[in-house]
Length: 230
Image (cartoon, rainbow, N blue to C red; front, side):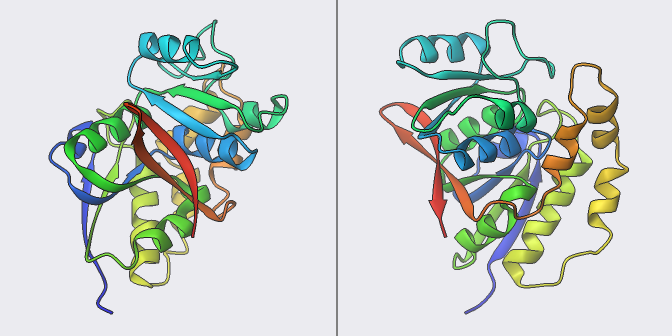
């Protein structure tokens, strides 16, 4: 079987016009947080583009968990911030629905799905291998690194895209990749921003912690993220 043709894009604008098999990456921290939620037994994650939409979706979903951020901070009325450490410390979320809004990841997935991406996967380092496995049999794959707020290239997302591309193609990964991420501007931001738990960085760098991919689909007019076993 021939290796798929891979196209790399970046930022929210990179989701415009995509179609077919697509991976959207947000490593710091949306799709690491999402993976930790699904790993703890959350039923599904409803993705919203704005805080207002997230609040409305949560109010209309009984017993939902409201999760996300605005400029990196958890809004006061949200149950969880965009933080894998917060997810680890949260009371048992099994079987519940999470409504999630972030500045880059959730918006990029909604935009890609609206454009025609299918199948569409949300990804980060913690689900890198499973995500690569989910698309390896395809003839073409688009990988979009969503970046900081969807407007600025983020080194951690570009590096994650490179790792997933290597996995799809069956090539050995760059042994210096994690060191570059750990010394990059994104990692510096996580460890020096007062309201971000520095332990989030270690969780975000746990390559292949989870053995599932995260598939985004339209469900009853909502964009829902669920785990997909591969």
